[in-house]
Length: 536
Ligand code: ACM
View 1 (spheres, rainbow, N blue to C red):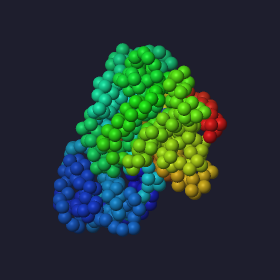
View 2 (view 1 turned 90 degrees about the vertical axis):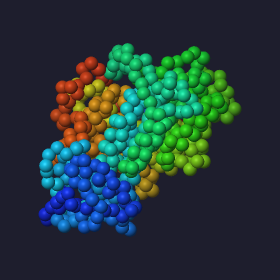
View 3 (view 1 turned 90 degrees about the horizontal axis):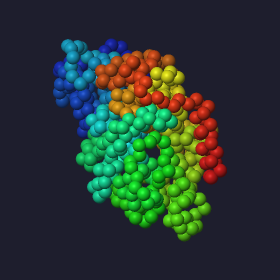
View 4 (view 1 turned 135 degrees about the horizontal axis):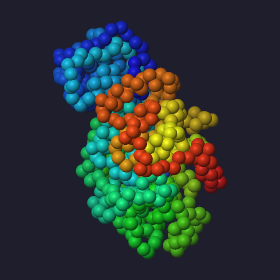
């Protein structure tokens, strides 16, 4: 069979099941969502009404299967999806759709066609409970409809967390009722770099956009209907230039700022006043109202400390609190928000830089700086979501070719993503259990359109899904299945990267990148982790 991700176990049977206009579909009430979704997607594509009734396709609730697990049994006589929870039923339905002709992925019927499913038995369950994808909607805004399309694409690949990076130096994308200037001022910038910032070229074209509170409610509900949790990130105390541009009193400098127009890590960070803490607690209040997710990300990455070192107020804070380093000041600052979340029954998530000043209690770590950092975090007793940048940052170039659109970073090939293993070597069972799962990341400094997002995401995100759902076992087999999977992606209109490189119109000769070698990237990684080892 050709499904992606590959199921845990498959046994082929004899013959095929034919779906006809009379084939009924029924589900136990607890798994009704899977049946509703099958009708929503298959009826327009196939013309099959799938009327309610027994003895056709049945989605049955059983006891004894794990979370998200399902069994799919197809014989020439019937189709049976069994699961213990709604997500398992849904993933059984997703697999069923992939077993049909790829035309089942179109939005409407294009021809008279018979629809059949191969007889087989699938027993399938995920390797990791956390199978995420970060989309940075701050650097380049992703219009709501494209985000909804991505939620469908995540669900199709059995990914279940959409980490929305909503705020950064170059844009604030979430409407906050109490502080409207966050989006009125922070929601757009004057211009953007063309390609890598090292070339110092700018487009002179405003860029902006934000999600209203109603948009967010819609996105969250749409995702929940597809068993995807939307995990919001409000990045603090760094990556906050857009917020400071909107409300200068949040910053450390007397002079006004504009929303960031440069890529890279900026010096601007929030000040550590009581008023700034109160402001962001208000923001978090609205975030909690809009996002029901168990985890909420408060950032903590790449917060430069130069402004704090020079700030009399920050120095006074450190003296009053008897803190030895600015990293400890960052932890003190962030702890206001993590404690607030914990008190409200949520679990804070913070980037691994928080290890430098101490991870606040109850906070899970998003480890992006590679395996040594993942090891440090789990050995310190934290739950960890891994997103090592050399393996899972999908903004990194896909090949050595200068034709890759805006080539940055080292090469993150399809194969390397497929073969990615979230758990570093050398962990004992207890430590392994603290690895909740993994996330791919679509940072969008250089991804300025949904078309380019498709190119960077696919097919690598399909390979990533296989790594976290099944565990990438056989790359050659993946490539055989991928040939069919590309037909599905084509039917959906996903403009994925062809395996032999970009089509002429997928190149960006106008936007030069800054490719680096793996050795250069590894050296940077080593310098960070050496710092971290010293501070931990
Ligand atoms: C990150 O890549 N700054 C989390």
